[in-house]
Length: 219
Length: 66
Image (cartoon, rainbow over all chains, first blue to last red; front, side, top):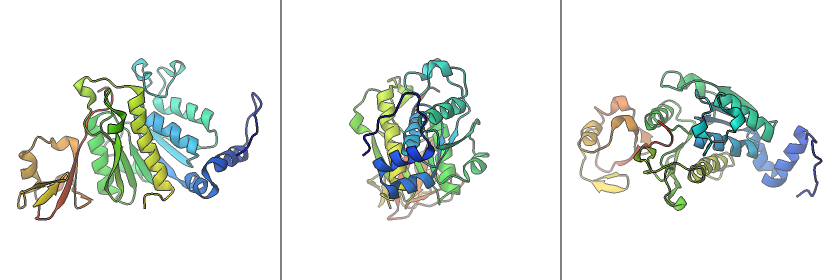
């Protein structure tokens, strides 16, 4: 590990950052991360956190999709700042990602994904993260991806609301290319609240499953 | 016997639609895999559950403001 201390205002080159990432992740793993194309559908409490974790790993291309704008009620758990209120989540998150990890390619679509446009939107991505809030939209996306893109990997989530134990959140492999994270039952519509810590645990499960898939840990 | 979400049920011979109607699952909120393959919703009516099938039903719950 390097003992280098950066100067304030110093802007690292792409090589500097790649060397730092390689120090932490190892060269072979970093090559796989750099070559990966991951799509995140929904940029709320799950998606905004997943995107930041994957950007920090140096994922080659992040494709982020959301139709919504940053709202004050998002601040309790989503990775947006007061200065970003009113902005499209796609644009706000791209800005944040480029500040954290400037050489990660981030492409975005500010659109509501439906069962008509999803095939064109997702066709170039290798791994899809389902990170919606609405359970009908979750079911629509999961069915569409599993039916039409059996070659892609899908990492979805269900059940991360409330103040229940963090240990109830887990990752299950449901079929060869389909992983599901969450406790499976904690529904925000049961009025049990929704806090950053528990949502981020679920987002962490999703992001880490993506990294395990890319590095070949889950073959 | 048929295994559904890890438990044994005596439902072979029923279609997926018939089975779902006998439960509290809402078709619009689920994804259903049979022997590790997704069953398209358009095929629920004419897919007959067979003895030995392993079925996983995921029913999604909300995770944000609706």
